Structures are given as structure tokens and as C-alpha cells.
Length: 204
Image 1 (tube, rainbow, N blue to C red):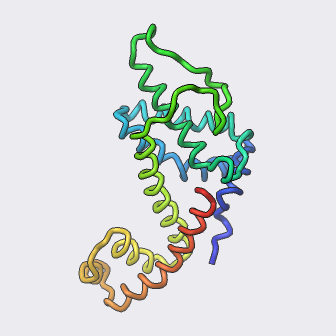
Image 2: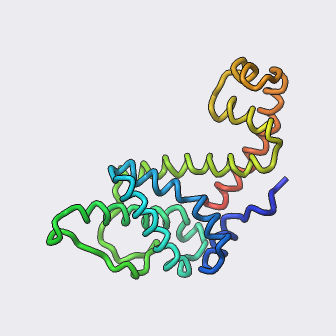
Image 3: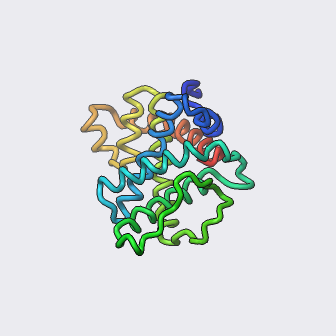
């Protein structure tokens, strides 16, 4: 079963090109806000600086999403967003330098896979981005699955599979039988794999 209220990745990107589509932007924020903020914090930024990076990334997306072509053979959305996030983090770190050493970029410049910036991405940050992207992928898939199965089965699956809690602990905590745990792992796991495959195919 597919939840018709959840747009596919390509559909969501098409919707956010309309700056007045508040619902699409809310969905987009919920999808990527946590990912961007976590990455900024792991690069040593403060809470306020991480919030600033996240805000500027979303402003950059709103300014440039119209030029983004959803074609994974040319440029995946993951790579496009990764570049933008890395540049914003680097800009925020640069702002800590004395003003004469700081080089600021025009916020209205076009950003994408084809960009005239001479700075390359940071390998360590790129690796961290991949790890956080995968974590975000699991979180997004979990939220989609939660809307497609019963609350009890999802709770069992979440504790046993995603949190790696032993069967005996799940049985004791949720007052269910071992058979219910195995059944939830089977049924919800099938839905989870299908959702995850869809997200990966979409280049989420």
C-alpha cells in the first residue's frame, strides 16, 4: 500500500518550485531540515550557527530549485543539495575570521551541479554527508512506514529492528508475544524494504 498523501521525491521537488506551495515546503523542511542541521553541528558550529546554515540553505534552494533538472544521470538531488550545504557551512565558518580575511559570496548566485566556484568539496565533509544522508533516509522511510501499518506493529518493528532490542525485551516492554514480534518483523519489514527501495530509486 502506498500513502497517496506522501509525494514521490520527483513530485515534491516539482512542487517546491512553486514558492507559494506551503504544504510542499513544510514537507521539504521536515525531510531535510534535520539532516542539514546535524551536519552543521558536527562541523563544530553552534546551535545558532547551525540554524543559520539551515535557513540559508533553504533560501538558496528556493532561489535555485527552478534551475535544477531532476535527472539522476546528470546530477542527483543528493549531490546538488550536498554542494549547497557544504558551501553554506564553509561560509559560516569563514564568518568567524577577521573581516579582511573573510570572502563572502553573493547569496543570489546560481548554485547547482555546474557551478563556477573554484573551491572543491571537503572529502571529510562529503563522507559525513553520505553517512547522515543514509541516516536521514532511514528516518524518512520509517516515517512513511509508520503511516502505512498499525501503530502496534510499527512500535514492535521500531524497537526490535531499528533499535535492535532483543525479542525478550520487546515482549516485556510492550506486553506482546514472541510470535507478534516475529510477525511484525516480517510484515513491516516487507513494507520498509519497499519504501526504502523507492526512496533510493528516486535519488532521495
